[in-house]
Length: 140
Image (cartoon, rainbow, N blue to C red):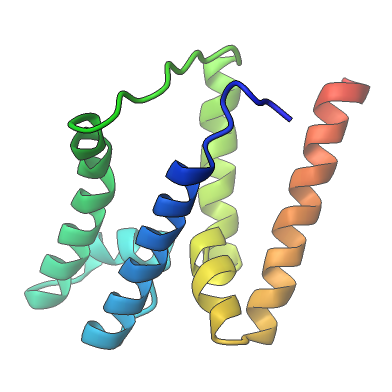
């Protein structure tokens, strides 16, 4: 465990905020807080539908700057190949569309609704992530 960067209080606060945001979106708007679906819908919807989606995406982007008012963000060092990271990001986006949802939609909202499809998707995400990390750190 990385005890230097261990942040249980910030992690708990972040989890609570994610839970509250997803609950409020469901209760007030009847929508599931799947980031890939919300983001994709921002570009193809119109009127009030586009406005709430845009507000949600902007909130995701701007929240780190709001956090900076209280606590400095950790320094991030990118040590990987930028092209490989870009390709990986595109593959994640493709996979999210192919799987009809992303980790946030399935892992947070789907599991809380006891969705069998989300359980299978989340187990698949996590299994592939564990295998990928093992291969990249110990095989390649």
